[in-house]
Every structure is written in C-alpha cells, then in structure tokens.
Image 1 (cartoon, rainbow, N blue to C red):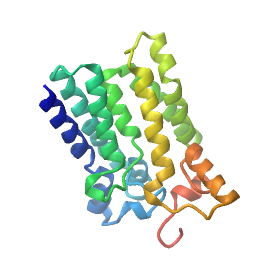
Image 2: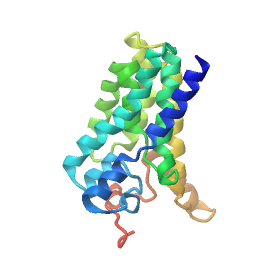
Image 3: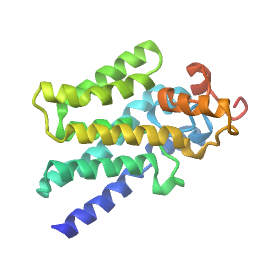
Image 4: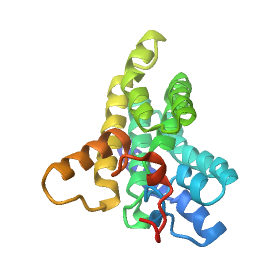
Length: 221
C-alpha cells in the first residue's frame, strides 16, 4: 500500500505538470502565454489572449488532471486524506510544472478537481464565488473569500471533516504562488516593494489596474 501511495503521489505531480494552457496557446497561436497578461499559462489567460472558446477544453482538462489522481486514491482505498494529498500534489504540479521550468498556473481549476471528488458541494461553492468575481470583473479576492469560508460551508452541510485542513492548504498554495509569481522580480526594498507584495497577495497582480494587468503583451509590459 505504501508503494502504491508513493507511486500515485509521483504520478499526480507528473500529470498535474501537463501545461494545458501553455500547449493550447502554442498550438492555436504559437505564442508563449507566460509573456502575456498575468504571466501564467492559465485558462483565464487563454480566454484573454488566445481564444475565448478554448477556455472550456483547457479548463476541463485542468480540472480532470487533478480529479483523476484524487479519484484513484479513493479506488486504492487510501481514504479521503490520501485522496486530498494526491489531488493537492497534482495542483502543485500545475502551479510548478516539471515540464515548464516550474512556471505554471494558479491552481484554481485544480482545486475544483479536488473538490469535485471529495466534496462536490464545495465545487459549487467555489464556482459561485468565481462567477460573482467574473461578473464584477476580477475574481482574485473572491477566490480567497471562497477558500477561506469553505470550512464553514462544509460544516453547515455536514461535509468531510478534512475540509478545514484542505481549505487551509489551498489558501497557502494560492498565496505562495501569488507571491512567487513565476519568479517575477520584486521592486527594490522599500514602500513600493511592500505595496507590490500586498497587491500580489490580495489581487494577484503588481499594478493597481486589473484590466491593464491581464491585457499586458510583450510590447506593452
């Protein structure tokens, strides 16, 4: 059982590392999506810079590549804890992919994949917040709000006991990726550096305007 669990964890990371958004951008427009918008090869950047229709297959694949190891862990009778570990490992692969120099996405689609298997109502909870954010033009704060309140929602609907730990891990992964930002340099020490770090944590960007940030191109950084 330990060998199976170990192989599943390694496999989860490798499968999670498949850079779906990056590959879609290369295939459809021969572009490096990491040079556009937020600098992350995510479904949202595919939507903004490649083709709006493509966000659907990219998003579904990104959800599926995390849901698969999560589901397999349950089939191997590793329990909800093992399933959560496998799923979150796949999210780590998505955020820091082996095949893309560890410069990956933000993991939100992966969180949906984990929740779809261990707590389907949590998927609806997160999607609801994302929809509100999309309608308001910026889902970054709403993503954090959804994850932070997920344990309370789970408790109210008698969800899995592991949800507080799972949601906490999701928050930590989100904040770590936002600050690391695919190794994008921070300003020199001082007030501006602190402002940028705070913006990354709360809004997942380095500037005040969300629109200007997601519409960046190599010729207009």
